[in-house]
Length: 155
Length: 442
Image 1 (cartoon, rainbow over the protein chains, first blue to last red):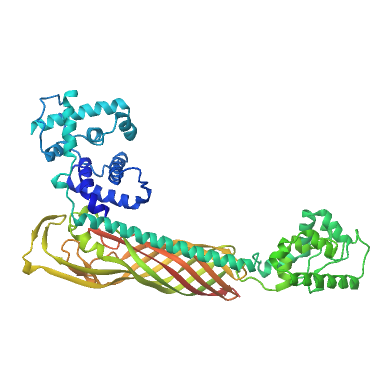
Image 2: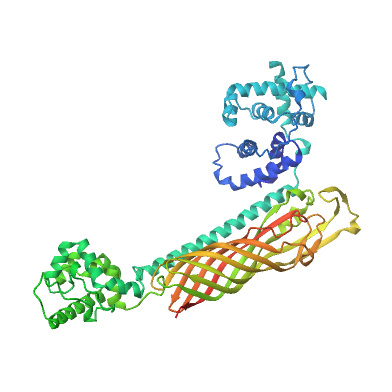
């Protein structure tokens, strides 16, 4: 069964796009509902978990694009806007801490970071997906990195 | 910024399944519930689709034997009027009209300027239906000879009609008739009028030209379900086990609607429908769970869960049908489409006022998970519902019997928003059986 096999993995995806576990669970349920409804559209030209991940990410992005921001309740910290490159954080750091820091980032940076670093998408693909110029994608990525670095250094 | 690329590596590592990303069965329960609801919606959709296909197929078959809709008696009387018929024929085919005048088949009538009203008979067997030719274009002939010619023609027409089906007649090329009669008979152009009036003498019973009332009784066996939503203001009061234990244990149930039906039919195709009904919406519940934890709650949310002592566990095992009875007063507007002499398709859409009479059964509480008796719960009394019906009616001179698939959906919530975190909008779909008596003004 798809849910039993992939639920944890998809939950990890959801948690990267949501601020807290409750929002992630909402996204998980919406995503799996969509997966089951659209399973007929899966043509088998990629791995099922890859396809499912795409479904979940698209769902999260669509919700955000439609202005509902159902899964994100960010309280923007203005100090992050002025963050500068600080000393590097150790290479090894607990994943939970990284996720917690990621969740403090403004949505626009968090999404680009996720798509670029985790989903291995190019700036061109990100720009197309988000409907933004490539330059914006690049600047959001580097700004997001700086902010995340700042946050991780603070901890 | 390249120095910060290690951030990407950290993110990739963090993207592996973290410990707090593990999901449990309750997550699946929520998805299962939504899939179940979708399945129910699809069943309803297929139900209506299948009924529509069956109705359409049946009507198509009926229409094969009644190729064209027959006009009412009054329409026939109007159409059979010689002046109208002659004008139609001459406008559509002046040459044929002249030919007809010159032939002896006697389908010819008076010229447009010297029209004489026809008698009110709608049968060709009545010789008075046909008129003498225009004195200006033909020499005067005696009344007896006209009568003879008319009778001969009528007999020939009748024979042809008996030998062919109406459908075949409509497809028969005009030259075939010209071979037989020496001209194109009127009824090739006005086939519906003449064929119906000559061969059958059967009027339709739709009464589109007369305003009338229809009253009678109506019974609708139906399947009831509900659209459930969450009251955002009180969503914190929903127990984390609610979906798994309660929501997933509630399903559609059988209900019915019974009452007095009244329809007003003004002239034309539109009509208005109302009545007084007792409407039942239901849900089947099958609870089987154990309450192992308590929930501490304030007025807006559950603040804490705590484990119960195993000796205090509550075993809930209840199966039954929850029922809500309403008085319903609908107000619908409808349109009727004739399909044959007796059958017509009536479609109605409108709204209903519903007043909740009583509720019976038991329901799991969304916070405590314990069973509440429905009679002790606060429900909204006044409701509005949307109605949609479309189906087949069989008409007799004084009777109309209808078989209509219907959908009724409450537009207002059953529960009060101030007290319930779960808000349900019940709906039902079924087949409405109606028997109406027609009442005409004397």
